[in-house]
Image 1 (cartoon, rainbow, N blue to C red):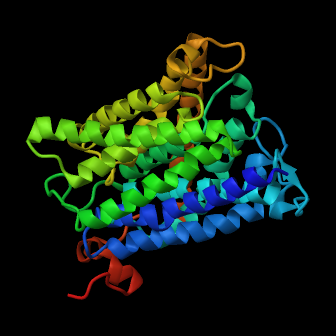
Image 2: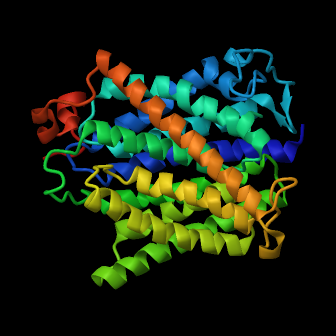
Amino acid sequence: MNGADTAWILTSTALVLFMTLPGLALFYGGLVRSNSVLSVLMQCFSIACIVSVLWLVCAYSIAFGEGTSWWGGLDKALLAGAGTESLTGSLPENVFFAFQMTFAVITPALIVGAYVERIRFGFVILFTLVWVLIVYAPVAHWVWGGGFLANMGVRDFAGGIVVHVTSGVSALVLALMLGGRHGFPREVRPPHSPGMTMTGAAMLWVGWFGFNAGSALAANGNAGMALVVTHTAAACGAIAWSAIEYIRFGKASMVGAVTGMVAGLATITPASGFVGPLGGIVLGLAGGVVCHFATALIKQRLKIDDSLDVFAVHGVGGALGTLLLAFFASPRLGGLGQAEGMVWSSQLTVQIEGIAIVAVWTAVATFVLAKLVGLAIPMRVAEEVEVEGLDLAVHGERAYEL
């Protein structure tokens, strides 16, 4: 055991949980109507609770058990064999377990942004449970647990595929299945509290240091560089998005700036441990630009109510960063090199294959699981509940006194 590594990953674990609670909850909560904000907070909070327990019971074992190249098995269920002396690398295994748990928590919580203001709470809970078991945990095993994608040479330092592609694709599928919110796309629903959204986004920015730099699993220079490029990409993403808004509309919005920041962060995530400062700048700018136009494509052109732009920001950003790392991992550009035996072209081919495999599996599994869960609990609330707002009708509370 290395004490410095352990201390850093303990800290990173707290930072990544901080991203979901309260960061993501506030970020999403500020973007919805005032009569549904509590429903969003409740969904994020509840997902954190149920996924944490599920991770302990069996999902960690599925993701990081030895098993096969497809499935980790159940040998580590309930942390069997992982006492206080058990190590994963230089870390106590229980610390590694807790760190990875926070990734499992935030991934389905990201999907919340696709179905806000119109989904049944019971559906969210049951769907999340089965989705983590069938989608997240197996994909984590394929990429991070020694599975077949890792053996192919697919690189994903902190979750461009495992977190952002899975959540983004699932968000798009659920948005298509649910249909738009009442009045979409005719009615434009401005965020009820951009200040709340900015507060949550700032927490995401800080927490992302644990997300990316923590994924080095050590207190070393690799973690330091991951932190530097993460911060740089966040800033560049916000700058790019704001600049586009100013050029197109004559004004740069607060919500646009923080959305660009998240786009920059999602884009740098898979590459953060493989690229240098130049990569941080380019990936951040690329994420801000590409994700900005992706949001317009999804909502305005295709008329898909991915309400808080989960696919356009996280799915597109995560995939974009996963592809660009093939170029910017080059030592000539300040990176740490491609996977062993690969050049940029072969690395790019493998990255494309990894994204495609995970995206197809996620889309099919999400559709099937949503249909099956829907047999027990209908997906959508009644129209009058949606119009009234979910807070009082579903949870018996209001966020604000009238």
